[in-house]
Image 1 (tube, rainbow, N blue to C red):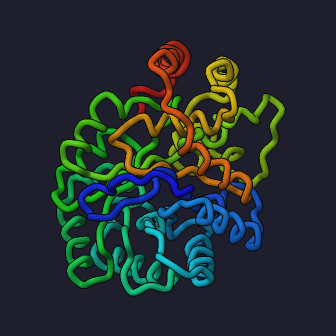
Image 2 (cartoon, rainbow, N blue to C red):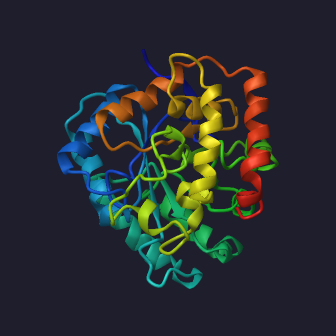
Length: 330
């Protein structure tokens, strides 16, 4: 059965409500072989996902190249492929977001993905100052005019960055962290995105796997897995790892969540369905490291709407257990 679809902002395209986040098949999640990565993406597409999100830095281009290889093996309509640019800068600062650098990054992604025009390029969590530099967005407008990309958006760490980005007329999408442990986008962001008809891509929907319910105090992560090396923001924003929630706090909250999961669903599917209760969300992009995970993620689309009592219980748990750790930080 095909997945339900939602309009992707003003682009004129629809995407499956659940898409594929391709960070895990690129790097920073432990070892995923190329064969496993390809099989996982094939499973996601077989399950009806029509949206893939990647970035030029995931495995230094490996993720984009795997996507190219898999899509070359598949007949039929091509899915919507979104990538990102900016994190190749070293140092990663606002002054690096020049027209020349952006064009260089985009040319590399065009080659990695094997296309003449990118469906969507997102600035990859740039420094906040970038949102106060109209010339950066003007450079992206020029690249659209040249035909190198069809549309552009931003991937943000903070709600305020998303709100600022949407003030630029041609920003078509905002990617943001939103999950049971990160509920602040509900306060203002979703209403503004809906008002402006800007697509919303939800990342980190399972809080780096915490919301699968499969982790414990003794869970060990590979040295090259960000869940081992970035818990305190050592490599990038700590909000990307377990949504910024302290590990022990998150484990305790997950234990409380289990009683709310409907029969026949996993905790992960329940967490994804909760996100889809928001009509402003265009697509949610859980990652997967194997075909079974990809298929299970897609199955969340078929779950019944969550009842008001469950939604209220999840809000109360967030406010009691989680909000003090994250709400005002992002």
